[in-house]
Image 1 (cartoon, each protein chain N blue to C red):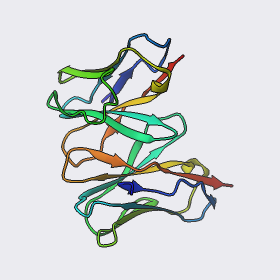
Image 2 (tube, one colour):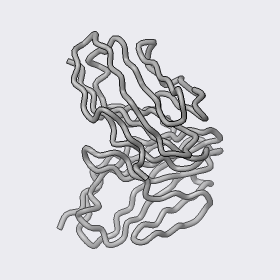
Image 3 (tube, rainbow over the protein chains, first blue to last red):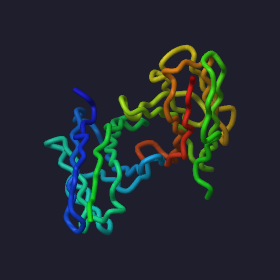
Length: 110
Length: 113
């Protein structure tokens, strides 16, 4: 079992819709959770962090964390073609390092 | 803030040659990470430093790989000798504290022919 798992996609959604990206992790002791966006040929960019159960909203983005079920999700409201990218989930355990999933490719079509 | 700075952006080298990748972290960030990204394996952590000291190099694939951080503002990742399977994008990232998100550099795309 991978430490951090994501569906590779692509996830295709129409412009204006809600995109829902999911991530599961194996270590119940994980403490910090992050979502990165990576455009093709570019470096990962941190877009959301979440540390406690529940929802965290930032603009069109909402991160959701459920530690009991060991999953974290990212919702993108009013999806735009410019949101088309690969979204990486990253998890921090009791250490200094982040473990990344392999990413979900999102395609938003006009 | 100039962000994390990596050089070169692209490197093409012949098999057997030595390759040196460079990274300047964000000032004040105590942690520096070297990652490798490929289509097949995604982002893999190679090594990381805390306050210039290597903490975990368990991700370094072979003895051909080495990394140093002589001071707080500079780190190198060296591959000697290079092999075609080392072709990947190498990212450097830094963070100011454990458990916080990283800031990535622009990466070095390495091609070994």
